[in-house]
Amino acid sequence: MRVLLLEDHAALREMIGDHLAQGGFAVDAFGRGDEAIAAAAVASYDAIILDLGLPDVDGMEVLTTLRARAEGALPAVIVTARDAIDDRVRGLNAGADDYLVKPFALVELEARLRAVLRRPGPRTEAVYACGGLTFDAASRLATVSETVLDLSRRESALLEELLRARGRVVIKDVLEERLYGFDQAVTHNALEAAVSRLRRRLAEAGAGVRIETKRGIGYRLVAEGPQ
Image 1 (cartoon, rainbow, N blue to C red):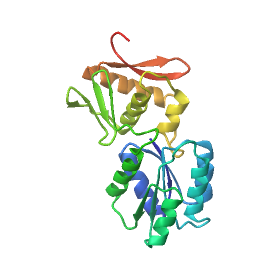
Image 2 (tube, rainbow, N blue to C red):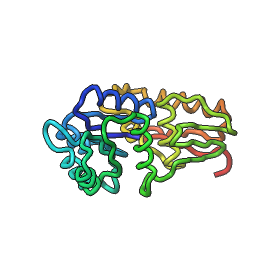
Image 3 (cartoon, rainbow, N blue to C red):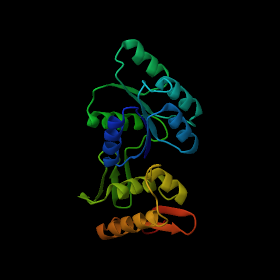
Image 4 (tube, helix red, strand yellow):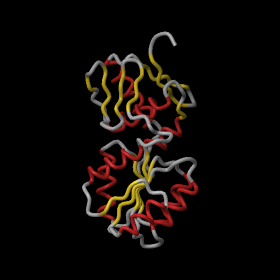
């Protein structure tokens, strides 16, 4: 999943971004509201995490702008030093799904982010299954016959995207957008290499699924056997 992070404190921005990346998220992190708005105009995000005290505009204005633009729900978590009840109410009324006051634990922020992503909407499913494979989006664990697969963060994120589509082709450009942030260099064969590694791991585990390549288009995950 791809997350837009808006936090003007550089060190905290880096800490949050690194932590979420460890959890399998692709993170685009910015320190100014205009940068976040520009990024959201050209990329699709599953959620936004934002501070309210920004150097150029108020974070509430950014949230209102992005929620007005979003097609469907855009889960949002506010992280801020503003702890007054009025500020919390304003944030929630502006469209935020949760509100976390600084200082906070990174694990709590991740847990709250995953919680809002599980709320009713287009991304409600937490556990995916196909063939003999099960993937828990919350724990990031893929299992086959109760055996946990040893997947890298990139492989885990790729598997989740393919499982969410289940049988439908996911366009290559879409996968690249979902798996890589703006600051991550994507070589011509990066996605193909990730698919190849994941395909091999699934086959070795006897997962009962296969990744099909639709040349020039993308990939799809299907259960083996009669369709």
